[in-house]
Image 1 (cartoon, protein in one colour):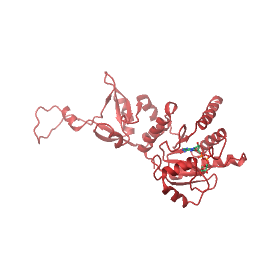
Image 2 (spheres, protein in one colour):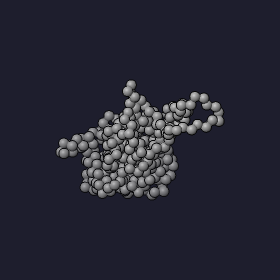
Image 3 (tube, rainbow, N blue to C red):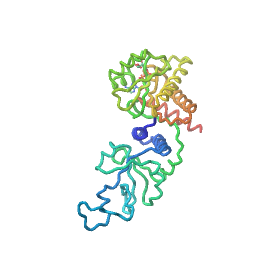
Image 4 (spheres, rainbow, N blue to C red):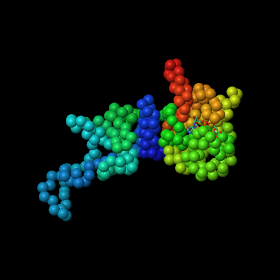
Amino acid sequence: MFFFAKELERAIYNWNLGGADAEPAPIFNVLAYGYEYDCQVVVPIENPEDMLSMINVEVLKPGDIITQQEDVGIRFRHLVVNEEGKYFIPIFTSRDEIDKGEPTSTIQQSIKVLFDMVDHWPDCLGFIINPWGQKVFLEKDIVHMLMGYEMRAYTAILRCGVLEPHVSAIVNAANKSLLGGGGVDGAIHRAAGRELLAECRTLHGCKTGEAKTTKAYNIKTADKIIHTVGPIYSGKPTDKLQLASCYQNALEESFKNGNDSLAFPCISTGVYRYPLEEAAYIALTSIANWLDEHPGILKNVYICCYREEEYEAYRKLISHSEERL
Ligand code: AR6
């Protein structure tokens, strides 16, 4: 089950987290899904009192019934941006987002209907999603592009810890006991609270390269935690296979759980000392291979680089592959 509003809010949040270089592809994925599957957004409308003032009635007594010849219709609120009256239509993912601004009447509206209507309003420049919060402008040309957008799984590299992006599941770089430790494992257990440890005890550990899922408890940035155990770097060929299995089994778990967005730390590159560039290469290729083998899965994947060196390793790898293209 895809939670459109939640996933859209998450994609917008993570886009902002990614800073100036971040690609909007994860947001486009969610919007294109919303367009294809007729998902709903909340749209402010002119208040009924305002509509009354539009009706040409001289004297009104209480109890009078007004009959209007023309269809008054419902008018979406406009955010006018220039003297010529050009405007954007504000749309919201949720009530919480609307409540950040002035109180207003609203209706639920299908994003498909809105996008399909955009060319009927000559002065409309497009939509603004969540104008009172982390806003995203969808100018008309973007709306047109989204109407034919091909959804695809997307992998973004973020310079942050795995607890920062908003996703349906985060991945923990755990040890075989699954009972907590240092590094990201310690940070996840501290943030989730003692109930996580209690659930982990019921799992009876995890083999290197495999993955197991728990709830996220007090972690508000994710619904689930997928625990995987990376190899302790030894330089043997099995390291590569085990590290690749971590990524692939975590993706498999998230697929089984129905998670639509997933954040990975750089597994094994901390306490377990895996060389950064090789680890980055294995992470990217294993994720890409898994996604290729599972076409049609919409998933926004984020690789979180807690340390600058990890981020640099990915940047280097990506710029090399761009040079080769
Ligand atoms: N918050 C977020 N990310 C972190 C943090 C943190 N506090 N600390 C490290 N990272 P690591 P491993 C990032 O060492 O190498 C544990 O004791 C780090 O930059 O946590 O797989 C376990 O219990 C890197 O991107 O895990 C195991 O015994 C990623 O987290 C062992 O360490 C993984 O680094 C696993 O070693």
